[in-house]
Image (tube, rainbow over all chains, first blue to last red; front, side, top):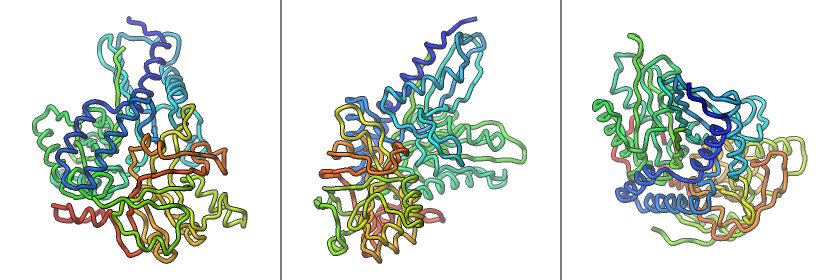
Length: 280
Length: 192
């Protein structure tokens, strides 16, 4: 049994909070540069130039590139032969979030409940999903999830007869309805299959895939390209000021489902697409 | 790209008449930062007959909740938040003279009508440029509801703060016009 001290996990979480909020991932910057080359609208180009410039300034100064430093979402791949010593993993992750958000000058955006809207003061609790895997590995993937775009996400229980065409249309319409509110160019996470909640989980997880990396399944990869083209034909454009680059990428994740079901969930992420991971 | 217009706050209805959707504007002077919780409190203040944190007449509200400032900086990263969440409150301030709002995202019909009637313009700032926008904020001071933290009302003094006119006083709407100009797909419902 491999043992990982709680402090090591806390430190890794702390560092991920700061890194994800201050450094846009290289693959995402590359996607944004490609969008700048392809964008036809002058307003759209200006927005993309500013976004790239903002990313550079934030990285240089180690400040958040967006003031909404979001929910701290973690996907934890935990090997069956790994044990965290000196603390319970949920508390250990929360402690890392507490430190990261305080020391990184990040905004604390979490309230106690939708009804009691008192700020928890330290951006905890983190939102943590555990994925048991065989072996001794331990991997933390953080997604900083801003609320503006999360608010524009949606889920639909399609029927098998409605099928793939309805799924594609639902994804595009979700982006259309979100319009400027989701802060385009967006990253579109799509989850299909499973029961209700599984589709939503997959949509969120799809956002952690490196920007523009296609699904390994060629059929899903083809759908990703087709949906991306449809979204970029909506005209919404960067910041919603009109243009040809409304989404940078569409990532679909799929899971087996019921004979009666075709669930589809769409989770949108704004141009400040923040994800980082670390293996311990 | 259109020429940049420098605009000094406070604003007037007459001055706002000349602004058109798509104009790029550099704002100078005072902006009041306020978002969800502060707007809810301002509504309560109006309903109970108490004083507002500032007199809205001629002023501009910026929908933002900044991140904490590093030492030596006036303010932390401060980009715009989604304006539609303030739709239920904005007309209350517009009726009391508010002449500008800065945010991102689509406004409701009720807000647009109130804006036209009272001469208030809606400007878009680019979310995701929070670090750049913070550089244009020269002074920041909490003036009310300090207990709300990031959501407290702040008086900001800005210099050449870059925004774009989204909704003008003549029915212009950059979001709608931009989308129509670049759309290459048949409309099947949803959206604008």
